[in-house]
Image (tube, rainbow, N blue to C red; front, side, top):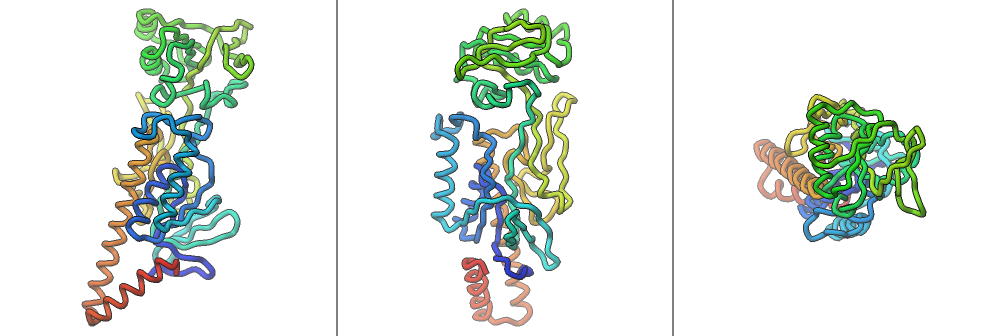
Length: 345
C-alpha cells in the first residue's frame, strides 16, 4: 500500500488536466475500475475556437460541448473531477505521490497522468491576441477551411513562414506574406512565392484593423493598410509542465529545421516519463499534437498506467503467496485492497 498522508484522500491515479487528453486517460482508467481523480484548471487550449475540426464524428462541435460530454462520461464510470490548480507534486518515501492543490487540498496517488497542455506565445502585435482562434490562426487543418478563398495574410516571424505559405496557398489564391520581423526569404522561397501568386509585403505590421467584429486589414508601421480577413501566425509552443519541476522533469526544446519552435516534456511512445509512475499525454508531451491525437495519447497513457498497476498488484500477490499466505488470505487481502481503492481509502 502507498504511504498515506494525514488528511489526504488516496487515489490510484490523479490526472492533472481536464482537457481532451486528460479526460480520455481518465475514461480508460475508470472503465478499468481504477479510482481516478481529475484536477481541471478549466483553461483548455482550444477555448477561443468556436468549433473543433478533423475529429471524425465530432466535426464542428463546440469545444466546450466535447469536454462537457467527456466529463459526464468519466463521472458515469465513477471517476471524480474537481476544479482547481495543482500547486505542487512530490514523491512520497513509501512510493506514490502527494498532490497539493492551490486551495490547500492534498491527495495521494499511486500514479500520475499529466495532461496540462501548452501555452501559445503569440507575436506582440497590438490587437492580435484578442482575435486568437477566431481570425488570427496558425493551423490550416484546424481552421483553414473556414477561411477558404478569403484574403489571408501570413505574419513572417520565423523560419516556418515558407512552410505555412505552401499549406495555406491550397486554401486561397489571395495570400500575402507580411515580411514583418522575420528572416529575409531565400531566393528559392521568393521564386516559390512568385510561382504561386503570393504577394510579399515589406515592412513591419504595427497593428490590426478591425471593422465591427471582423478583421479587415493589417496596418503597417508606415501607415499602409493591406487587406486581410485572416492572419496566420507561428506561436512559440510552451508546455505547461511547471508542476513537474519538483519531480525533476524539465522541458525539452523542440526543433524543426534547426530552429526551436517550443518546449515539451519528454516521454516514450506510451507517455511514460523518466520518472517512474509519471505519464504525460497531449500537447504537454507533443507541441504539434492535434485534438484527435491528444485523445488517442490520453487513452494510450491511461491503458499503460492500468497495466502498470496490474503488474504491481500481481507482484505483491506473488510475494504474499511466497511469504506463506493461503489462497483464502490472498483473496481476502485483494478484495480489501480493491475495496479501499474504490472508496478512496
